[in-house]
Length: 196
Image (tube, rainbow, N blue to C red):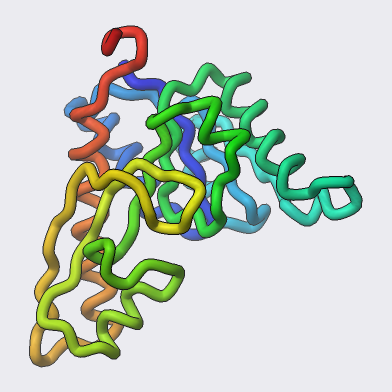
């Protein structure tokens, strides 16, 4: 069974997709802890409703420290290790992870991005793809590194941009695709102990 730590910043719909896949019995995993950089993120309520430990770690809490970025990432690392996490999943987590976390979980930090990387990296991928008028966009799941939306790609799924699409309809279909692709990719992973 995979032991997951899920990082979120908002609604947590991809977190819910993982919870649902586990409950349905086809994803052999346990979410050990959910961490958000925003204390009011609705995803924390989703975690609590599912009986999962939910923690908020605000980056601004470390503003007075000598190295706030290091201290914040070190706090994340400590929580993830405390809950015996094997894989870290960034599911709508809108911050760049530092070496403190990445080095503690080498090649075991997964990011979900709502575009076909390397196209449209960054926080506004859906809007940028729609504005660019591309006929196809999609979803990428990849191993994260210290650069935004970079690292080895594990899987991609295309989402056509339809002639009558609005930004809202396109965004809804991309989210539907995310909710399928992320659990599917997680189902292919193995715990570090079993992969040795």
